[in-house]
Amino acid sequence: MSVQHNVTPIDSTKIVAFIGGGNMAQALIGGLLAEGLPATMIRVAEPVAELREILALRGVGAFSTATEAVKGADVVVLAVKPQIIQAVLAELADLVADKLVISIAAGISVATIAHGLAGQERIVRAMPNTPALVQTGATGLYADDVLSQLDRDTAATILSAAGLVLWVEDESLMHAVTAVSGSGPAYFFYLMEAMIDAGVAQGLDERTARALTLQTALGAAQMAIISEDSPAKLRQKVTSPNGTTAAAIDYLDAHAVRAHIIDALAAAETRSIELSAN
Image (cartoon, rainbow, N blue to C red; front, side, top):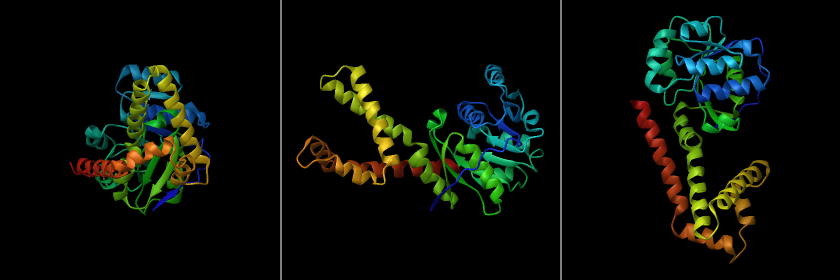
């Protein structure tokens, strides 16, 4: 079961430290600034000097080490690659006992983070997706039962700066979140690619086929978001019997495309489980 969070306004008195200043951290920082969190309340640890310069231009504190960035912070966001998470946890183990820790490191369990942080319990695991870069992301969140409601609200508010947030009640469901929304943008891009190629094959120039495809994708998503009808019902409404849409849907059904999509997401979930076990 997933629970959508009713987001509270950002607490402008909390200092948020990001460990890692890459694309996802920058997306969240941009969202927090847009939500009204003062730049002076955001700190970032980033070893790459060029990225620190970019971050500093936004008014946030940019540091070369995690130790410097977390001083005085209330919340620490681990925005690093899974491959270096152990080294980061070792550096932070003695520095975050009194802080809320949010991890967006893919595939890293709450237990792994807690162990690396010498038993820290105030931990939230998050799985955002790349549309967070344009503040339209979807993020799955998980935390153990010991986490307070205040910490849950704080984590959800920070992640909601980049889009929708949903809690899952079992950490194992984070693999499904990864399969559906974490990897999900790539599936839609894949479909867009195919539709553009089809338009070109049928005589449209690439620019026209691309514009029609992207606007159609945007419009369909917006209709699905605001409509009380399910996607299945919306599809039925635009599928006239024996019409052009019906011809395409019949072809997809005849070739078991729906079943293949379900199997594809199952493959993504399985791979997520494999990666988290390594």
